[in-house]
Image 1 (cartoon, rainbow, N blue to C red):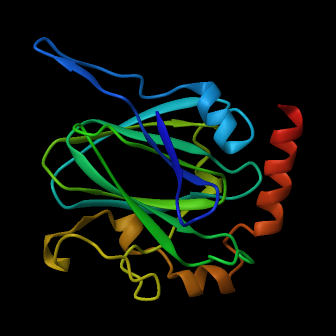
Image 2 (image 1 turned 30 degrees about the vertical axis):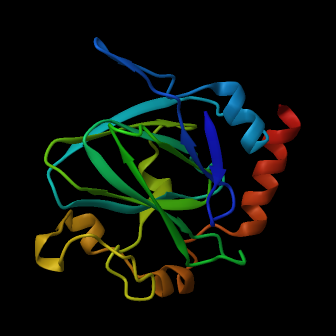
Length: 202
């Protein structure tokens, strides 16, 4: 498995080795010890989710407050998504910037994003299926969103605006500047303290 850190610190792309023959294919999409070596601590799995989306569906920018935050490991059993990882940690040198990974059922890449980072899934085909493992269970009052169309984020979305399907919750979400002014974002200091705590426990 090849592992690459994204331009957003504490986010990683995992590209597995796919063993294909006339019967089909086999791969290891997740190895706990390889993730632990890259990240510095294990991913404590608490929940697994699956979303199925039509072409043009946009999910995000979703994130969780720290603590406890929520780390995610995302891959696509079927179809194709762009996963945009957004640094929402106030005080980070890369605050407000993003990186993008194609996760699909061909190369079988996966994305890990640490607590405090946000992400957006954009479905490229009908029926695209995202599976993600998370470090905490769903906690509605700690999980928030930023409008993915925020011009300050300037996400390079793959479809015109009139072809995007966005939930009312995400469409009505605050901009990055509004969330910052209202104190709705995690801080880099809180995130780094959490990362250190997780590393010490490991």
